[in-house]
Image (cartoon, rainbow over all chains, first blue to last red; front, side, top):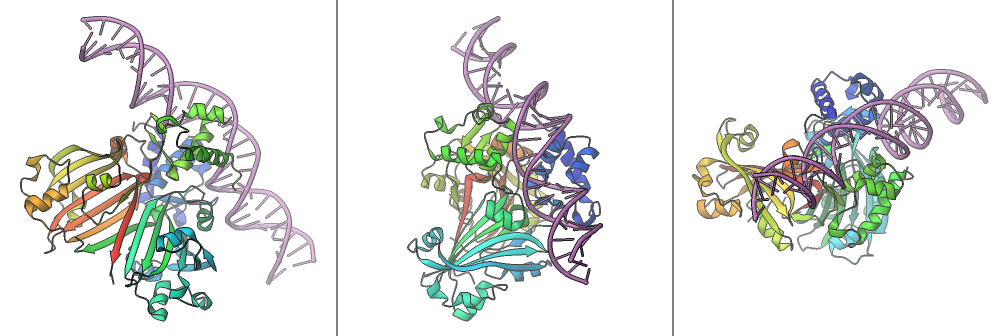
Length: 237
Length: 237
DNA sequence: CCATACTCTTGGTATATACCAGATGGCGAG
DNA sequence: CTCGCCATCTGGTATATACCAAGAGTATGG
């Protein structure tokens, strides 16, 4: 069982990966070079690389090459401290791009919020980076009545939640979170610069105020090995 | 980008998967048969199957074949309702096997609980099934002082948490959860009857009582497409 | 009747090879 | 100097083929 040749390759590569200086700029040699070095085929070598990718040790950027993966980001989706805050707190460098803002109906969001399927919602799509690596593609839908004129401001680089709290005085009292492992679809893969079908992690979150009125809903697609979800709880019966 | 042939295969297979009666007993034809039917190679066909696996639509049982995957199980790791309870509540059939019980030191557990690395702990390893499909392999470590004689009983098929609460009067007041996506290692893969490297989801949980004394720690390895983690929160500042 | 051995089927691993498509960086024209 | 083209890198997709190893069921021997 453990005698497959590609597992020997993963072992040897894993060994090399422990040495932080083994690869310049965290970049692995090309598949062709590695295959020759290990005296095997690209097909087999890719099997080994795929294994290490699954273990979260390396990742690839579409048609650019393989890279050693940095430590996972700790992320607590139950807090609404902004992305920038917790990335910075972990000594990493955050960056956010707004890809799109518009008004649209999105039935899954409406359903999660208990609204009619065709309710128009403010929609903001963003891409987030950690140390200049794109790790997260997210879409957020906000109920217009809760934050009128939200899209006019155009300052979403910082925390949207802070915006909702500060400018609109909203209290994010109630949250429903779901997360599951799913490979990245075409859009998310493109936005994150990875191959379609790469392993991903999806977080969906519906938020309500203290009167249980819906505030917003968002879907996050993460590179699977970029994060570790952390939740700390007290006194939950 | 979307013109790869294997993506056509996934589309056609996805189509067929929507029909619940397309495959007898939820089992797909063999790779060789499918490859011939779609006039392609097993290699390419496997690429398509791998894509659908990543999407959570199908899964494989080691050297037995491919099967269409049932809906994900909803799982709230913040509650300690037993596995049997919530599986049953969702109209599925649970089963649990105890693989091993012993006393051992496990440094990661000790660290998560704030104990010395070599502290001996009660250790219980179990395998859990939903509708006779093995979906979860878990190890649980319990601080002996909290539950003296726990291992002597040997009735772990039901809820271990209920046991801790009922027989030992423990209150599970404080929890630290971490989960992340990671392919299955050799042991978990073997226990779940899947190929090593199959996509998985890991849940780690450390539990404390109301005086913040450590109670136990567990590691769960799930088949990645068997579950959807759900958390509902109120009034978290 | 049961246990064991065998056989057939399944996915798992591997070689060898070819071409495609996006990313990159250098070169040359303006 | 700048812009745009192009050669050359990268991984991504695909064909054809072979053999291995474990699961499952069947035949066979006690």
